[in-house]
Length: 336
Image (tube, rainbow, N blue to C red):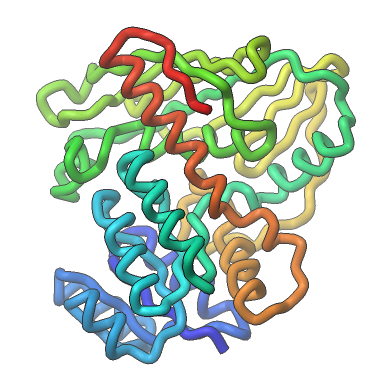
């Protein structure tokens, strides 16, 4: 039995708690939040111990692993503290605010006999898994180009509801590091990390409300010839599923969280477990991801373990930070 502690009892924590409770070999033993009212309500709902101090939870709670669901700026530090206490870590994205901090996390992890993964749940969506299988079999021939599109609604109320969002110091960015990073992970996981990237960011409808970008566009290049076109905005009127379009020789393939279309025809996919907690546009891979993480810890054979984001979780962060650097310096940025 793998005993989990969740740190951070905000929106995403309910999705993680739901997944833990659905896995036979796992249990939620503790939770932690600096907001005592929120944390105690979460603990009562999930029948677990409550801690207001993360270090105390690590040292006193009967846990084997932690799920880090705190504001972005705490991810790297809290991951390393958990490693120091001998705890396995499943961390929400991004793994850190900067590439340098992410590299220090990976360096510490590689010196530990501990499991580590970053929560890129879309890798476990049936649509993503099916496309990975087809790409690995070179089903569509040569890939000529990739297009990434994300248009969601994140208004002033969204940012006012959490004091850490909308700032460079605590969120680390805007639409790119918080929303589009999942789409960029899809590119780097399904194909590979681009060699270089050039992009621009801006704050438009949310100007004056946030420091960070609410819109971005970029072009990346894979192997010096394959273009990756990226568009992201938090200024739309609703939250349609982000899409990644792959222009193969044999067909155009359009991927979203719950659908896969090949040459205009929808592909029949394996049935996914629908979460009562997660928003539909978050994808439906949280339970499968957590099951793979638990199976890794309990030594149960599971092909999904190979899909967990660990070393390669840094690739999407490199793309995000590369766009930020490119915007500041107005030049191409190498990602290798």
